[in-house]
Amino acid sequence: EFFQPKYRNSKMTLENLFLPDDEWGKDHILPKIDHSGRWENIPICMPSLMTHGLLPKGSDIRSHSLPDHTDNHVAFPPDETPSVIHEVIACTWASTTFKTRSNRAQVGDGKRRLKEWLEFNLLSGFNHIYVYDNSGAFTNRDSLADVIDLFPPEQVTRIDWPCKICSNRDGNEGERSSQYAAESSCRMRFGAHARWLGSFDTDEYLVPMGKFGSMSEVAADLDRRRVRVAVFPSSPAKPRFDLIDDPEKTKQPDGTFIPTVKDDETFLHTYNCNWEQFPRTKTLTHRSKQMYRADYVKLHYVHYATVTVVSQMNEKETKDAGERWTHRYKESHMLEFDEENEATMLHSKSKVATKMRSWKERCTQTVLEESHCNVGFPFPKDYKDGQSKNRSDGWAYNCFLNDKIESYWWPKLVDAIKKREEITASLQ
Image 1: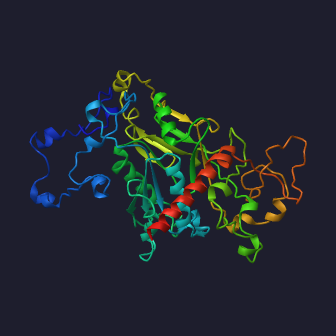
Image 2: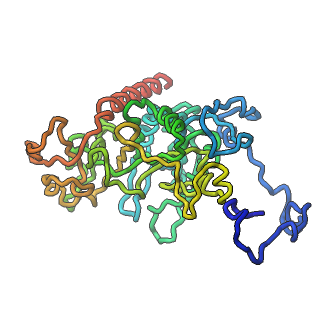
Image 3: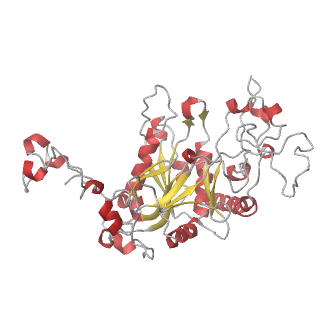
C-alpha cells in the first residue's frame, strides 16, 4: 500500500511484505492516543498564499486561477490539478552576506545584488519572486527586508529563513543545506500554484533571447512543445576590466585585487562577457540550472529534476500514459535551451582576490579559458581573424559580448532602476 507506484503491479516476489490492513485493520487511522501524543499537537496551517498575503484570508483560490491551455497529459489528472495563479515564478535563497564554498572568501554585496536581480527578473517576465532571506542565520541586526519592500508585495514575497547551514564538513559554511531546504520549500508551498518554476541565485540572470520578449513567452512556447524541464547551460562570465573599479582601490598585500562593480554600473552590464561564443559547448552539467513545470517535477535538487510524474510510474502506468518505458529512466520531456534563439543564463559570479594571482601577466595572453584571466576584455564586434588579439594598451581579448543584453536588456534595466528610484523618492 505504501510502495511508490513504480513498485506496484511489479512482477517481483516480495517476502516479508508489511500489510497495514492485516496488521492494524481497516479502521485504524493513527496509533493509539496513549502512544501518539495529543491530537491538538497536529499542526493545522493556513495555506501559504494566505499566510503571505498573496490571497485574502478565507478566499477561494479557484476564483483566482488562470485558465490552462496546455497539454497536461503527463502531469496531474484533471480532478487533481491545483489552482494556478502565476505563469512563471522564481525562487531564490539569499543573504546580506555569505561565504563562498570551502570558505575561500566572504562576500557582502547581497543587498545590492538582490535589488538589481529582482528588477531584472520582473522586467524579463517573471510574474512573482519568492526570496528566502537567510540573513537571520548570521545576525538579528540586518536583513533583506528593506530591499524587498521597494517592490510591490504582489510581485515579490519575503520568507524569513534563518535556517543555519548544516554540514558534515566541519567549518565549511559554503555548503548550502539551508539553500537546498529553501528550494524544496518554495516548490512545495508556492510551486503548487504556478505553472513554471525555477530556483536561481542572485548572480544568475535569465535572459530571453531571439524573438522572445519575456520568460512568460518562453514558457508558453515550451508548453506548446510539450517540454516539462528546460535547462540553462552555465559558465561564469568575466567582469569587464573597463567597467570595474580601479584595482588600486582593493589591492591586496600579495598584489591581487577584488574586482568590484562600479557604483554607477550594473552587474548585468559589467559581466556581459562570456569566455566562449554561442553556441557554448564547454558548460558543465553540475553548473546548469533549470526551470520546470511545477506540476510535473516532484522533487528538484539545485541542478537536477530528480523525481518527476513519469519517473514514479511503473511499467504499466508508463505505457498507459503513452510514455516510453525503459528500465533505466531517462527524462524525455527535457530541453536544453538554444542560447541564441530562446533563452540564456548570464552567470555573474563574484571574483575574489585569490582568483587574481598573476593577473597582470595572465591578462596580456589571449587564452580563451574560464580561469586564465578572471577579468574580461571583450573582442570588438568587428574583429576579424588575423587581426591582433591584443588591445592597444596590451591587454588581450578573452571574452564575447551578448548583443541582446548589450543593446536591449541593459538599457531597459537601467531605465527600470531609474523609475524605481523615482517612485521610492516620491514616497519618502
